[in-house]
Image 1 (tube, rainbow over the protein chains, first blue to last red):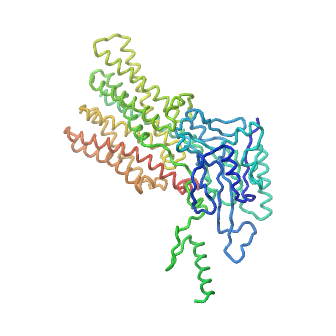
Image 2 (image 1 turned 135 degrees about the vertical axis):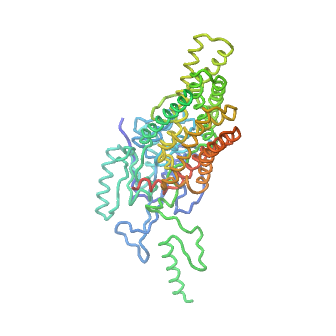
Image 3 (image 1 turned 120 degrees about the vertical axis):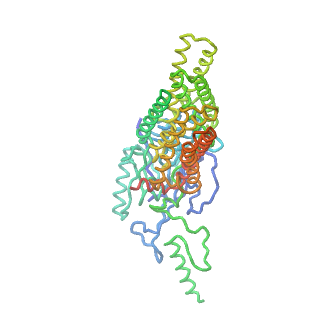
Length: 257
Length: 331
């Protein structure tokens, strides 16, 4: 089975939030807050247990490529649809003690809702802050990569609904290639700070949801150097082993002398 | 004032707002100022990047109870090997049993779907500290119950070799699993993305081990075992806790701010003082009398409990401010 992926391109996004709506409708996700944060037109704020597509609205006093803002300071408004990264080395998957979180045949990371008992360990294992425990349900939820749709040979709901094809769905290698071509194309049109956020050079080992970002990852609430927490296991366990041996030895000594 | 002047003034205010994120001038009150920005330093309008831990009061209490149970099992094993501290062995074994029974109750209670607790035993994953912890507890509690029951049975006069071997084996298993129980909780917190936890992943296991060691010794002292063994264990534990506290203070790392500042900082310091310098000082200066020892013991227990909660709260604070993560990763 081929590994599928998303490629999200903010230079095409119009901020319509059709992706958010389609995702909620298809997956029958409950409503999770009708706040108005005041951060541009962002009304979801971040990904969570009941928000699996989150459109960011980034307002900055910088020009967008060669555009000129007439009569004012330079300004740009970049919209980006955030989603679960479906990491190659997924912190949530490695941490899950019930084996609820698994890798599907399409390469996505999937939480089996009939097994999850809501221990919450995945929540503190995701380097992107994606997965969370749903409040009155008790289980952890995140983007399923429309596993049910993919199994029926359909495109995930968000990619299907996106009117500008800012969200593209396809094979991972194919999309990686398309992403690099897009960067080159944008470079020619004057976008000098376009980059692909892929996290391939970290312990995450690459993601299956590619993002084209303009500027620094922090601006889009993406960690500049994400680490799957399995990278921390060795040093932590080494310390635990030494501590255990030390305190056993101490107790032994104290009683034998 | 003419319209042009007013417009020019408005433009100036807009420019100042765009540049500085707030406006400071007489008669101008921008609600919500300073206005959140996006960028390399502030992230996405300062909104959190990571998710906060969802655990509630049961988990820090479990860290404490499980730690005491684990140390008690180790204590029971060695005390029984010596053969002379029978009442101590009994106390330690039953302390371990109580802890070993309460611990799963606490953990199950914290689950989002408690009735599905058996799902924890579906798989065993080396790479998940929680999986290792769950299986350790699943082995510890039966072992320590068997050990305690067989011990009592032997005490009623049945010195059958088989029972003695069974007791030795179950105490040994409980000792081994108990040691893991005491130290794995540090790994549980350390192998996460929460900056204040992951950056202290080498400190947490010995910190929690010392905390558990001192707590178990303190409880035994409060139960009346004012013997050299419990004194020394309490002393070493308080010394280690003191060192941990000093280390956190002198390192002055940005990521450790939740441990030094704000409500969480005050709580960690309070807990650290009680289980560290206060317990140590009282034990050294006043430890010759039972009152002094009991005060040192009580101080340690209270400090250890406070510390466990403080680490959870510090984790929440650490996750809620994206700048901790940015500073850590943008090196």
